[in-house]
Length: 597
Image 1: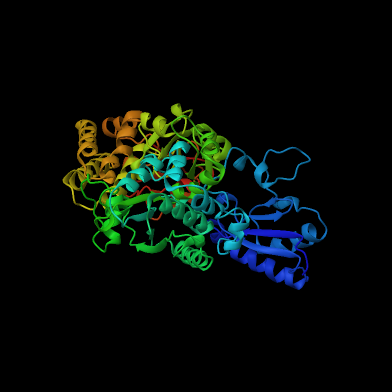
Image 2: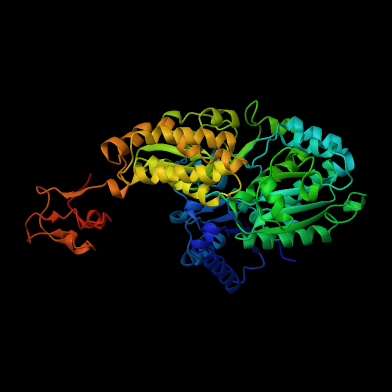
């Protein structure tokens, strides 16, 4: 058998696929076969590597050379120059601040330099459909260690000592949660994974499910051993077909090797995993609603107590954690609680995965130690704001999170600091905003989402969020009144304290946090009838600067409403009655003569 001298990894994550990575992989396969190099150079399709903005990504090992925005047309050049002649293709290398004589490598890039990949340790580095590649990187060794070397109580104690907290948003200590469930009386208990990732712009769990499904399975198997569960469910939204496909493949592979099912690794420990496809209801991210859905009922939350650890799925003691939480477990058992606890802060240990989106140069998936600042994430890892515009704030924690302004960009990213700032960790959505973002409209956007996703069971959430949304809509349309601000604050406080579940408790957060830090924008909308960010169309006025206007007529031809008139080579005018405020005139004007006030 001929030895493999190089590996070519092509990212097959969703963003890279949308940019053409499938065509890149096919081109590599054809060209390598054509040059009779397919036996000595192995082509591997991985999943998301995180650096979504620069996809399609190609990494050549053993050098670790990092190519970005590769097209199918670039493939013959990479093969001929790099793989045959040993000369990296300079024009395809990521152009980042590196030493002059240094070829950019994966871990040397600014995007990765401050990251520490624990939950994402294998994503982008292995073929997720081959269990052998997971095992080759130490996979399932922690499960073996837990079963053979540790008692269930010792596994729980190690998890407690590590300081691992739930990564789904609540931040409850994971080991303590397991302990409660283990101590609950009953022979039948259930282990559940919440993979119902529904936050707009969030794709942290999806990337683990698609890029490293065995890390989840191993983490769940260890948790099941610790708690005393023999049956588990992965609740995954049906909108993740690739994740579900790879989970099914991974479960079948693990069962075939005796890592799942009856008598795991020849012991008396048995654990069976099922997949439950959810219909995409955001409320099913709440644990009691999720369990109702698994049972075949409408996904609606119930009053607690009793908590799931006491009375959960089918009234049996149950434990629920999310994908990222379970993915950390094998590393904690394998490397020890002290290793995990050495990262992060005193009360927030380990790392956290974020989906970095919005007005930032380097969008993608990042994993950083707890305690790094928002500034580090946005300006070092994220590369700053698109177009050099002014940074305004960041919405952290998804639609149920809060907005943190630029003045607090040195806030550490940990559970306590974010709550103190009026936000929350959430599952890890992180949306960056610049000077063009209207904070009132942003609040309306997130509240519209949570209001439409309300299950309707409790009055505070069902009616309260609807009233808040009506007020925000009225303000954005220029019809706000002074008492609206006080009403929003009062409604928000009432909903937070009286709603039945976490969706309702946190739904007002975007509104309350923007009122706290950007109150002047609400006042400008209400009192001055203007939008400082020039984003609310109902409050905009378009006019033409006669001194700059040359009368070229471009704006008139671009206007779909026929609102611009004027003679050739004479200053034009905009009829405010006809103007639909679409902005086409501004885009067409080469002289900057059209003003948006």
